[in-house]
Amino acid sequence: MEKELARTFATRITQASRTELVVIMYEVLISDITAAKEHFQAGETEKGRNDIKHGQKFLNELMSSLDYQYEISLNLMSLYIFVNKLLTEAYYQVEVKSLDDAEEVIKTLMEGFSKIAPQDKTGPVMINTGQIYAGLTYGRGTLNETYIDPNQANRGFMA
Image 1: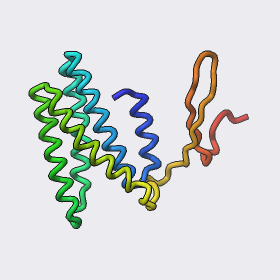
Image 2: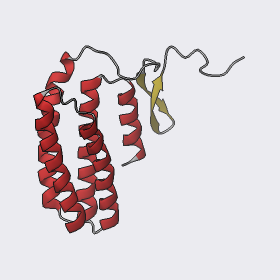
Image 3: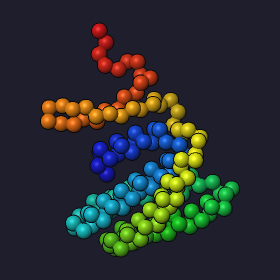
């Protein structure tokens, strides 16, 4: 995963509710599947396999965080096991078809969780993180993205 994309996901995670966190994990998984497909098509088998391994770590985290008091958790576990099987097939057979199928399942789940995420009013899962404001600044020939935590008093230079 690219460093810039990882930084974006990390920033979003600090501000995410439980449902938004699931959506972000789906996005990371889709990103890894997309990268694996690109690497396989370019003949870079090891890089593609590394992407699959990274995605499987997120899939395993999704599996381990299910609450089996609810029936939907059993259904989600079945889907996660199926996706893991597809990722394993793609890993060993170096094929894109299994990755396409896995991506389709995860995208469907992500779409559903994205629709219910705004209803989750529990607030951010991570505590003791500052509110993040994002903005763009212009430099000589560059455009810089800046994140500012308004609660952090020790920003900048001290006179």
